[in-house]
Length: 264
Ligand SMILES: Nc1ncnc2c1ncn2[C@@H]1O[C@H](COP(=O)(O)OP(=O)(O)OP(=O)(O)O)[C@@H](O)[C@H]1O
Image 1: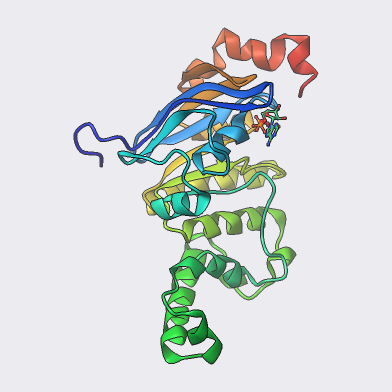
Image 2: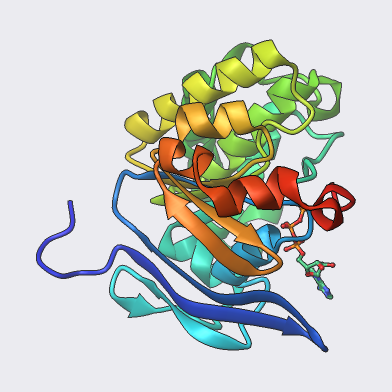
């Protein structure tokens, strides 16, 4: 997929300070095309801050982010989305009063070539573009198993399906790298198991590289090929699920010390 020495994704020594707090310290990560990578760590370890830096919501205090051989550090979020990096959020962010399909179509608005006036006047060109987008949105909904709910209000969907819809919206931006922030949060064991299958399926179907944050250890260990562990902003381990589960530093961070236990 990646020829020669080209960089698919690389975070080089990212540090994020908030005043006196070092939320993330020297975070480095290399991703290969098609990989499924996990990021874990106790509450407040800096996981979401890593996502916020990668997606341009925060500009790192130091360090670089390289995406397909381009230095994208400091790019605004919309530019990073346009480059092919999409994300979902820890808290679901849907337009509850819009239909399922309209929630997906919102992701396409930046692609509309027709002008505002075309839209107002309902000109044919605009209608044709909109029709095409609707068809594409429907295709994505079919892929994620929500096509039969296209006309329902997003807010009326059960929780697990709202999470799927969030992922569908991210897919509508045609990403190559998808970041999922706690996709299994709030799900029951059955939904979580289905989500793991679903994440694998979309990775293959859309040729994605996936980087995800998750607290559900069973989910992460069963799904991810490699895992990185943060604690107080520092990377304490990286490896396969088996290596991580047997790593003494990780066991200490999660279970060992009372100061950590209090943070969970
Ligand atoms: N915008 C901000 N301003 C100041 N401090 C922040 C900001 N964002 C995060 N922090 C702090 O940085 C640290 C890391 O937070 P972050 O949300 O990245 O952790 P996390 O690992 O995602 O935690 P959780 O698992 O609870 O979501 C925390 O101490 C948090 O309070």
